[in-house]
Length: 90
Image 1 (cartoon, rainbow, N blue to C red):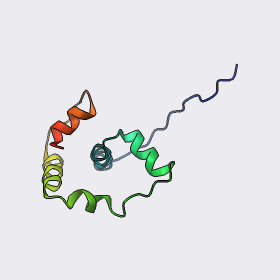
Image 2: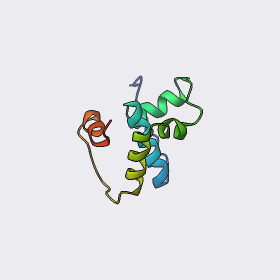
Image 3: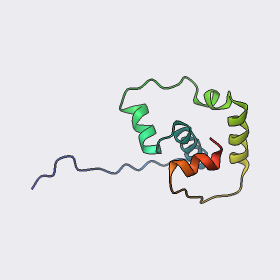
């Protein structure tokens, strides 16, 4: 029996910094990391020229990102995007 549309798993090795950047970019878009990656690669949407510049142009975002990068807290989990946005102050 052949199953149509079976899902496949993709594993990507990222540095801690790459993972954090991807997580931040996805959260600022209000989507999951999977959705963010798919929208940037398969759905042919134009990506911003410089994501870092885009995120840092707001003083509030810049302060949050710097604070998050310097934080020693790890392993945080959020029940929803709404909770994550609240924690980030978005």
